[in-house]
Structures are given as structure tokens and as C-alpha cells.
Amino acid sequence: MSTSPKPVAKSAAPGAAPQASKAPAKVAPTLRSQHYKHNRLQQLRGFCAAARHGSVSKAADELMVSQPTVSLQIQALERELKVALFERRGPRIVLTHEGQLLLEMAESLVREIDALGDRFAARRGKLDSGRLDIAAGGSTILYLLPDHVAAFTAAHPGIELHLHNVTGRDGLSQLRAGQVDFAVGTMVDRQRDIEFEAMFSYQPMLICAKGHPLATRKRVTISDVAEYPLILPPSHLTTWGVVEKTFHKHNLRPTVKLQVGNWEVIKEYVRRDMGVSIVTSICLSDRDELAMIPMDRYFPARAYGIVRRAGKVLSPQAARFVEMMRASATRTTMGATGA
Image (cartoon, rainbow, N blue to C red):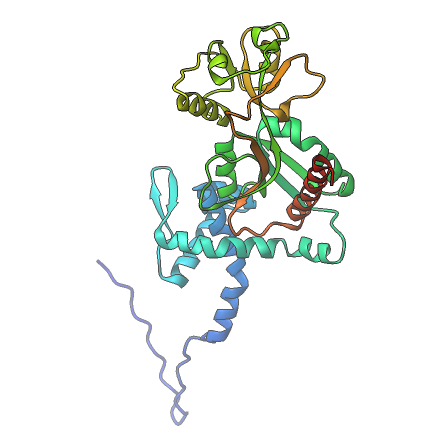
């Protein structure tokens, strides 16, 4: 294989002082460090987005940059920290142990810096822009949130509000992925990385058609209910598990005639005397033409409130919504107790 000829050094002119060879210019360590720190926020933002999506391309789409840009940001962090932050598993990338440690440290930092403008405006008494993402189930969006959303949007019309209609399981996934600020709903099983602040409580109720045999009973037992077909939400939702657990506790096996994932639909079929149902009073009103029988002897009350990641600092928009909702819950409790 041929080799390129080496450059020949020119001889100094006779009597001339020998010229010192020029060493490549070096960047002062302090300047290099400052340059790295200047770009560190972008690198961490790209890293956090890739971790959320499990994909560099999706992270690039979210940040509206090119895919190579995100890849270079991650590589720069890996060189600086001298660790691998991701490993590839098929089409997805997943965090290494070191990557998970960095995510736990970096995610809140990025969120805080990104929210700096909004927080500054909030401290000055102005909260008229930004975005708020809330996850909630269909019943929460339909029955609990309307008054709170109306009050919030009237007070802060410049804030863009997004309600994500999801199941409890999907809402937790969105919380952990940082896709929503918080969720509103109920929690049956507590989890270490999730905080739940209960604000409202609703009672368990048996509903049946007004002409149903149970409608005129002075006292209805769980055994009485077991004699009739039930209409319930699908088995992957919270209500099913609560009802099933309670019946099994009393050595009873309920007959579920119909599954449907909407309380308004359930009430309509119950109204047509196709079965009975156990619901939470959140979905009931005086306008419903149904017999409503309290079942708090057998089923627990259902608490609704704010669900958020443990230790997460809320954005000013989210904090304001929670503050207004908390104040409303306090007024509701005082009214109910006659205080």
C-alpha cells in the first residue's frame, strides 16, 4: 500500500534564527468547562426526553430538533460522565442503572429551569400564559372537574389547559413519563413513587329501577344484591375490583350481566331494569330517575383528589389549579358539616 510523502521541512536561511514550530492552539480548561456548561441544559433536556419516550427520534420530535442533535447531546453526557446512559433493546432504548440515577437527578432540574419564566411571572403576580396537562378518567372529567375547570379558565384565560381522558393505569404511566402535570382521580392501591392528596369523598350506592323489588326495601343486604344481575364497568377498572372483592369477602359470587365503561350508560340500562349496579355517588343527582340505596355498610367510600409523582415540584399553573381545587374542597367540607 502506498504511503503519502512526508512534508519536508524548509531549511532556515543562512544566519537566520531558527523558527520555533507552532504548537496547536489549546483551549483553556476553564473555557472548555464553560462551553460544556453552556450546553449542559440542552444535553440534559435531550437525555430526559429520550428517557421518557424510549426513543431518540421521538425525543427529537418533541424538542423540534434533528435526531443526530439528540444523539450528540447524549454522547456528550456519556463522555463527560464516563458511563453508558442507555442500552438498546430492539427498537427501543432503555436506561442503564447509571442512566436512571442521572434521570432522577436531572428531570426536576430541567423542569425547574424550563418553568423559570412562568415562576418569575407568578412571583410578580402574573399567571396568564403557559400550559397545564391533567390526566383523569371519564367519570372524573364528567362529574368532578367541570366546576373546577370553569373556575380556573375564568381566572386564568391565557393558560392552555389539556385534559387527558385515560384509565387509572394509563394516567400513572403518563405521570411517570412526565407527560402530565398531575392526575385527578382515586387511588385504591398506594404506590411508593406516587403521592395522593384526598380532597372529596363519595359514598357507595346501589342503584336499581324504581319498580325493582329492591327499590322499596327498608334494608338491603349484600346477599340481596347478589340475587340480581349486575351491570358494571369493565374488569380492568377500579370499580370492578372493589365490587368483586367485597362479594368474595361475604362468600358470594355476583353475576355480571353487562360490562360497559360509562356511568351514564350504566344508569340508562339500570333505568330500563336490565340489572342493578354499585356506583359511587359522584355520578348521581336528583335528576336521575333511579332508586338509590346507600351501601356504605359493605363498600368503602371513594376518595378523589390529586395524584402526582412523589417529590415532583408542580409548575405555577399546576400549583394554582391544585390550590383552587383544595380551597373548593375545604368549602365543600365545611358546608357538609355545617361549620
